[in-house]
Length: 376
Image 1 (tube, rainbow, N blue to C red):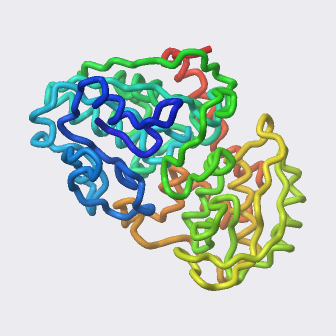
Image 2 (tube, rainbow, N blue to C red; image 1 turned 90 degrees about the vertical axis):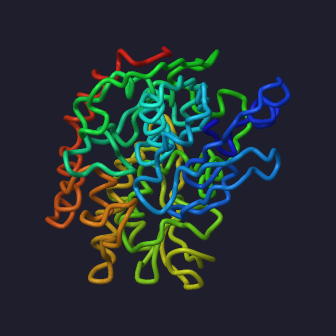
């Protein structure tokens, strides 16, 4: 069973408890980034152990090396079926889809069947934003070339992985010989946002507390690739961003000039309790989404990066520390899929000129994904 804290039914009963009640005891639990119970912070390795509630052995799929991201053949040796139940966020750099893809790859080698229980894309399945992951820029935040906001459910991603993603990097370019069964949802439609399901929101990872967080994440996670705080250590991660060297009023004014649809920016000060600038007063903004139907989170995130580069002056820097097991590329290049956005911002390109770097690939993907869609 590959699962996490949000692997629950409508009554909030966890999938492992449901299986046990049905007389099925999993032989092993696999945990993605943050762990089976979701207690670990981002990019923190999780050790294997036994589940405290059930005593079932737990194997972490997020350790200290690239090899730790995939089940070993030994871990799958006593397995007939790998059941996948993960609430995704509809964003390429939210790592759960890649944990699933790597697990499918390992299952194919081991002759283990894979069953994916589908769940809603909380952002809906209609809108697409972002460009390709170019060769040499693949990482755990983009092991194949999907747009940042891909508009797929996790089972639709699984279907695409099985068929091969030939326009991406080499890892998943070829079809995967895996026995894949998808259990589709009933009643979900592509234009549905999460609240349309009537289901309660369960935190899938420590810094994804609300559906509002999920809606800004495709754009505001880009701040992770800088020395500016993305709001970890606050009660509104990814909605609040800033740094001690940022003038929030000036940043908000410059962003207002872009006339971005469905969003307002409020200057504020905050003091993160952990992560970047822990304990320090930061100036910045809060991102307030006023109309999800027209809000473009990735374009908004790029506009914020562009203005942070200006407002931050010499204090602003791109993150150069190793990121998601890659040390030879800046984190922002891995997040965006190439160096085009970073160099464009450094070169003073307008927001429209920056958008032109990803729009062709975005439009192309809209056609490529059609045969993998399960819902209207």
